[in-house]
Length: 130
Image (cartoon, rainbow, N blue to C red; front, side, top):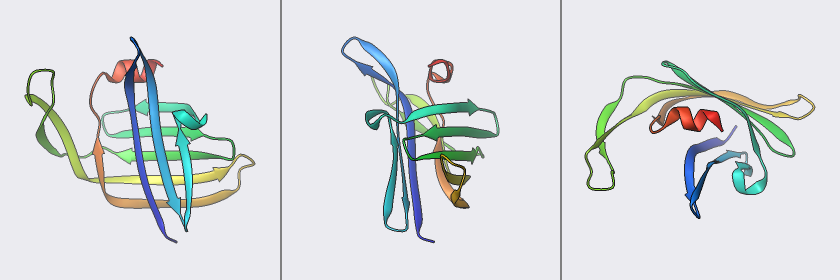
């Protein structure tokens, strides 16, 4: 099965306010399954633990379950308003479990990926409150 995934969530500043935005794309056998703020998808659950991240999303056709392990990474400089002084922990050694189901419960995809890039950073309490 040919599959590739990218996923991101953040607090997005917009016209004097901010909102939790996200974009996830699962490329599966030549078809792109989109879960994003802009297309009406919803986060059903987002939990961040010391050793993993659990994320469940839903769009009009399906539900996506992600579980990414958090492993030791490297500290990199990250942007602040003044310079590149903030430290960001990133890794390319995480694993991710990906399961895609129809809303009726039929499993369309269930697999794990290794050597996954993962960064968990920022105001996580605010990201989880939304």
